[in-house]
Amino acid sequence: MINKRLLIKNLLAHNDENSFYDKKRQINISEKEGKAKFLKHICALSNSNPKNNSYIIIGVDDPSNDIVGVDFFDDSKIQNLINAYLEHPPIIQYENIPFPHLSEDKVVGLVTIRSKTTNTITALRKNIWKYYGGSVFFRDGSMSMPKVFDLKLNDTNSKIVEAIEQHAQNNIQYTLDGVFDFMKNRKDYSPTYRVFKEYFVICWSGQKKVVKNQTFYSRVDIALINEQVRLFYSTLDEVEIRYDKDSFKIIEYVNLGLNGQNKYLKLEETSITFSENAQYNIETKLLFQPPVYDKKNLHHIFNINNALLEKLRTQQALEKYEQEDLKNLPITYLICHFNGFDQALKQLELSKPLLAKHSEDIYNLYKESMRILRKVKYN
Image (cartoon, rainbow, N blue to C red; front, side, top):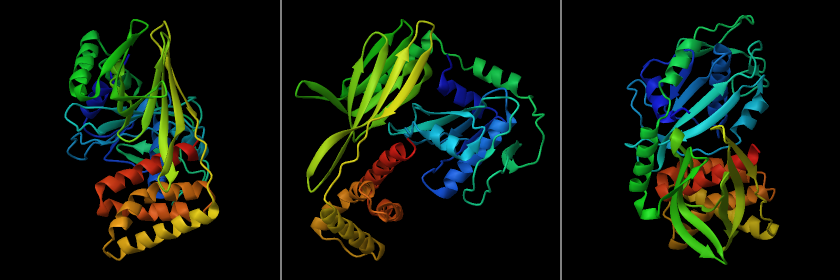
């Protein structure tokens, strides 16, 4: 089993990006340009390495090679995005890898790309941003370039990638160190662990509360220690955890509502099933059912949100009650979108720079709303 933290270190030891890995400070697939560039790099790496894995490391400063981290990103439906935009799409896995020197809310993103076949070319299926449908990309050194070539794809990287992955194999010392580090770092949130199939170790922590004989956790951190992968992290949502001897299940809830009448709605279920042969499988299932509200009330809230954005844009001072309304702006725009308001999503996207400038706490609420939207959109 590969220790993903070691894998990232070994990849970065090559310093320069090449035809089997790329590094990015950050990605933004919520905007058209960022989504197009991400698809371009996926396409290029898939074509350059038809017989072995390729990688994108996210959260690394270029050219210093320093690991600076990014926000936790748990879009389990990213494969659906790849399938929608690419012909002969590769298999994609996005994982969040914690590093000891980063703050608890930061990780390094690791994207693993594996071609499904060795005799087909990955290409854009349709137009996006400035790239045309049918375009094909290939890695030329550290660049992802449009290129015309035949199906005789090279296989010069297999031995290099195999050696890098071999040097990143996990062992019992890394596993024990990982458990001890987790228990120490999360000691304020009742950390615990469980061993599955005498091999896999999952650690989790959170603030526990019991409601009607049902146990929930907030400020949740869950990690698969064997691979140094953070499975879940949130300071906002409520989470239900279930497990037996063969599986570990995470049920995520989101707090939605209007005028203080909020309730927790199921968002997504993640199930990890462990096998006797030291293998495991992760499946996610969207559970979210958008709440339906009175359109007249929503029109009123939608107009209030628009007025607040205009005040932020023109740098007008907000009244105390408007400050409270601003905290609800991201999620109420999202509710309006789910209830058929065509302009709500555009307004939510326009709010991003204004909220980021106004308050870090409110900007975090914006990011949480966009995370919910991503999960629903790409399901």
